[in-house]
Structures are given as C-alpha cells and as structure tokens.
Length: 305
Image (cartoon, rainbow, N blue to C red):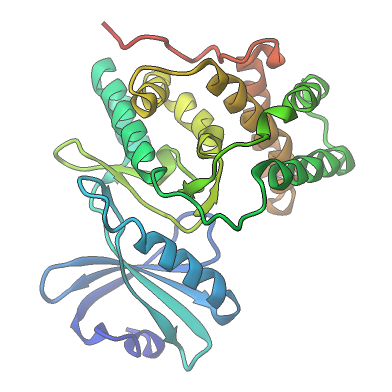
C-alpha cells in the first residue's frame, strides 16, 4: 500500500487495495477489501478540490435515510498525502456493470430493471435544494447560452443542429418556476450495476448537483441506446405510470441542449472521441426526428406483453 494511503484512518485493516482505471473522473479510485470482509471505494483528489469534495460528501450523506436503495454510502472524508490530497471513502456496491448485463436479459427483465431505476431516482429527488439557490431558469439559460456559443465557435458541423437550436430557443420558457432537488448528476446505465440477485445498484455520485429533477433524464439516451425497454421502464417507474405531457417536452429540451454541448466537450479528448460524439448526437437527434416531435422513437408507451 502507498505511504499516503496508509495515513487514512482505518487503513491498517485494508488487506487488498486495487486501483480502478475506469471512467472520466480526474480522481484516483481504489477498490479496497478489509480484513473483516467489507468492500470499499476510495476516491483521492487534489487538495485544490477540497471544498468541492466536501460538499459532495455532505450531500451524499443526506441520502443516508433512504432505505431499500442499493448505492454507495459515505464512510469517511479528510486529508491525506501530507495534506496534499483529499480522500472520500464509500461502501462498495457489488455487481456486474449494467451495460453488460441488461442486453443479456429478456424483455420483461430489461423493462422491470428500468422501472426499478425510475423508482430509485424518484426517491433521490425527494431531497429538495436549499431555498437560496439561483432560480433554475436563470441558471440553465446561462448554460444554454454557453452551449450554443461553444458549438457555433467550435467549427464542427452537427447534422440537425439548426433545428435543434431552434427547438431550444422556442422552449426556454419551460424552465421558469421549475423545482430544484438533489441530482445524481450522471444517471444512466454506465453508473449502475446489477447484483447476482437481479437488484439494481447506483454508483458514482461524483457529479451530484441540485437542479430541476427532470434534467436527470438528459442522459437517458445512453440507456435508450442500450435498451429502449429499460429507458421506457425508467420513465414509467419514475412517474408510477402517470407521465405528464410536459415531461416529454422538457426532457427533449434537456436532451437537445446536451447534444449541442457534447461536441465542444469532446474536443480535448481528440478526433476519435469527437467523431464518436458527433455520431451519437446525430443518432439522438434523428430519434427525435430533429425535434419535429418531443416523444423519441425509442419510447414505448406500455410495458412489454
């Protein structure tokens, strides 16, 4: 074990420490097994991230009262590496990556896991943001302005971008008076696991935030690309099979904004990543018929027979 890890309280009881090389986070991540048989997740960040990581840790602690949801639970937070790094320690959620498991399941199983994902998300959204936050419309409209500006200046063409930007402009007014709640921040199949008993587990809360709860569906396109049944079940589970019409228009607005922003975001990662993101974005826009509709082609209004 590295010297700087041994400074963390309880480290003397760690019998196995393996670094995890997965994901987009700049954190160093480790899978830990303890002498008493527990599995843990350790995240190490630069000390410059201290305030941000402390806010993340305290926010995840607010979820502790939520029972019957399998997710990473906070255990410890503090400094290590002679004060140059900050650590966050969580419980480990055992299971297989949902992206690998879901396609192997039958239609009903895929759909029911989606329902489960929607019900879990609804529980997370029961935690409301503090009242002193900037109004959602002001906050998100500033994001939209930045997304459109960055796209137009990046020099990379996206098929359907003009229609998409027009749709965004025509629907900005829907952002007014939206509630703000806890957000996982990156809620899709890439941050879910399936246990051996078929239970859904939620991981990687490092992008958590507060905002319109329906914004959490801006990444459902990753779910839909893997399994339209899962993605549709997720919507039905969240709303307990009573989906309001306004939801689809707002989901489309958030997805449209996400696709426009994704092109500029990918540039630092190189041409291959940009090309992949352009292809993904164009598939998403085509699935909305370039926003001639607000209900995507992948959406299934009923459960599988």
